[in-house]
Length: 159
Length: 321
Image (cartoon, rainbow over all chains, first blue to last red; front, side, top):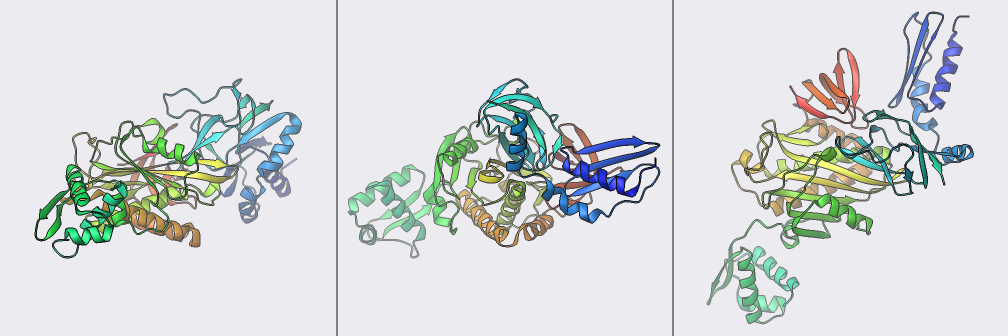
């Protein structure tokens, strides 16, 4: 079954709602890459060329559809895990300098005001605090990676 | 007579219009005895002020040291909000650290920490900033903008524009902005700006804008750095430069609140003209990106065209090749 325009449109919407920065798939020789970038969504079918959904609708929805922190907190509390999200676009650092120890490791206990990472943009250093008491269950981003607004950085098992 | 009165005496001497101001006039204006004035003239002399005293005419300020204590800055300061409260230290570890502590203890918007010397001045990601005594402006400004965190990076470009325009207003030599907020003279760094912030949910609680500006040439400056005085071949009064910087930041800040990032961005681009269209290397944590510097995006991030691809840079050390 070949992919249709509406399938791709659905995919774009799914990816947009999902907490991922990038999505790849291959289906019967059609490769699709969907990247969430700053203020834009790029849909890049590699081959064969498929009609693109109009990009304007996506542009405006990327940031606005990012779930508000409060809703997010509520959702994950149900699952027992709290997501620490990036409050801005920038570079994720696990330590204050390249040769320093990371702020936290998986399994570490954190409290509300524990610094867990830095997000940097344009030489603005934002120390992100855990904002909950708990244990770092999973670190979701690699050192030095670009993170999006609202992107989950850590999963914390709250206590 | 308190320190406050000594500062008033200094102000009278700084502002004197006629060649001399009489002891009688000073004692009338400050409401103190002429003996007390004499005592404080001696203390000002001990601080490096050269004050002539003539029994018939009164007092005259001949020269003053390049001090950056609050009373000196206040003499030049014309702001409404910024620099209204100043904590001055002859020597401190880092003005950034001190400003954070003050902000956490409730410092008001516009509060300023300044030091004549920093023993462990810091730059981005653990790098150090050389801050020998008496040679530069090492200061940290506390702002509390009612801004979303996702727009906070605009302030680092705003700070660059402000310092750029402040130096321009006092000098005539070419100065350039290098993304995101270094200032260069003759391709050498003269000013670095490091901004750190504390958020509260998705908003700014406070931000500390750290500005390091090399004013006097000194042998501790790294080879890739320069100073205002080397570029200008003249001397600067640091207190005046500080007041001018605060004034420009305040104006840019008010403009930003009213009109958003667009006008700041335009002026940033004007200051960075020599930067765009050039081949640059962006050293990021995860490798080097080479390409042509094309422009800014709406966040203030750098757009580099690299091998036909548009790369958006949020964090990097930029080298012009």
